[in-house]
Image (cartoon, rainbow, N blue to C red; front, side, top):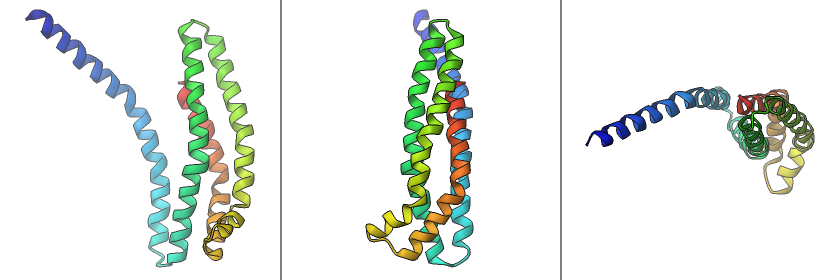
Length: 159
């Protein structure tokens, strides 16, 4: 009976540690998506359905093309840094982070080029030309922030 109580305490302690460790990541992701939600909210108040559709389309493309690609890549960084740290080689942890940041920057170039011409892609698949152009403008203006969000995600996974 006493053994079961100690198992319960260790499970509770473990759950508490997991929740405490995950709070910064949860808050980071929440704040990141609040930016997109705020954009949609304010554009929606303009009563211009074309602008609201364009921002929604732009956010969808940012999430699918940029965030999914970059964050998927940064997930491998998490694995390599963990292996280096586990083997006691903290120098390689920093090397892995810097390699990941450089590769992430290089990988961002084709994404940025695609986003500069995304209106042509959207029009070719049947989207309204005016909405496609507004979506492209929205995404192009967001590109600097997207680059730094990608770099931040690499650092977050490193830490």
